[in-house]
Length: 146
Image (cartoon, rainbow, N blue to C red):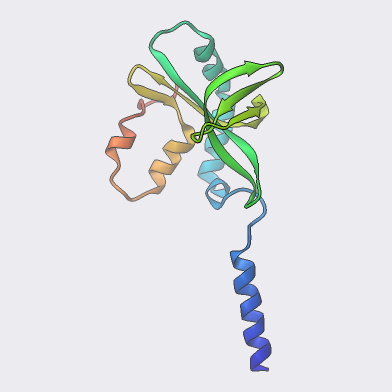
């Protein structure tokens, strides 16, 4: 009986370490889900800025949903975005080129002067931490939209 109980606990412990289907736990948070929804609703603002000739706009980035062996899907920030055929190509921080569609975008941000606009999910992450991070918060405009 004790062996069965120990075996059951061992199986549960191993199962707890295996990859979890779905998104990372952070993206299951209601605030994070709302941030993704708001970012998607305001995506036209990103594209208007990206296509504009406004010299104060720079460093355009998107966070896209990608397949993941660990979670089923994961979120990756891409920069150096360019349009290709019916979709886009962006670069990971490691320099890998990743194709994506508008429907894959979960968040966006770009610099308006010295500070970022957008960044809805990052703003939620800032609010989730108890750490003092004024240097990170100060990289973003108070309002996400220009």
